[in-house]
Length: 178
Image (tube, rainbow, N blue to C red; front, side, top):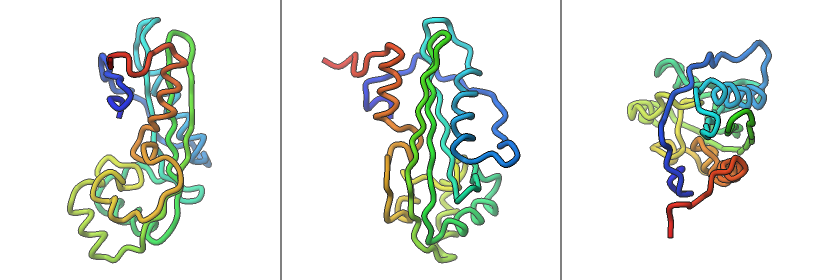
């Protein structure tokens, strides 16, 4: 998605943090905290720009993280079936001692799922490593008839907002295009 705005990272480094929600932590503050902690955890020089994001699926006050196994993914999908839920993506950009942050919230409605649809989707393996047990950009797109908000945020990186944050940090957008 960064390529859409002409950004090519020099390096991709994982942020090793504990992603466990705090007791009674609500989805939006949790997601913002994850992006902030990730961007602070990545080692970088004073002029380096670090970009981190986190996506959380929220069903009411409940945080649906990355399922541990197919059984948990099935439970998430059954809970989301026929309902609207929120997808919250937080982005944090750091350069030197300064950090810029943005949280984007979208609403997604999943169609009412049959057992065959749940099992068919699970058999694709696409649920693995995905908040809420699905990724709208893959086979689960067939299960999502309606969204309100940012498609790219639901995928995991709100492109327009990320471009704004990178520009605020001094990184030109589309710099290599002529």
